[in-house]
Image (cartoon, rainbow, N blue to C red; front, side):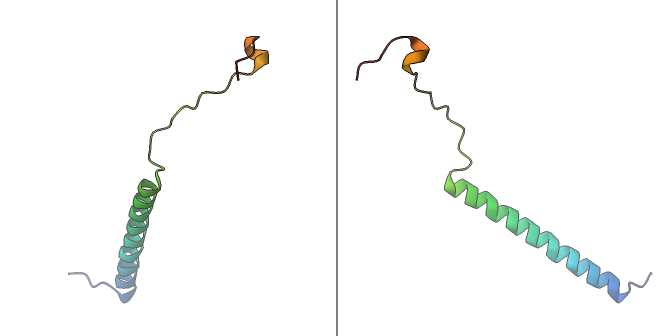
Length: 60
């Protein structure tokens, strides 16, 4: 069986901690964006036609 140096264990621990931080951060962003409504489908807002575009004035 091969011996693992101390630097190998340090690298393993740092890799696990980094992966957990990235995973927790991304999940927090998912929950944040869902709660703030950023995940809602896009809605087209119709533009108001001006008098010059349709050639007539709309009643007030």
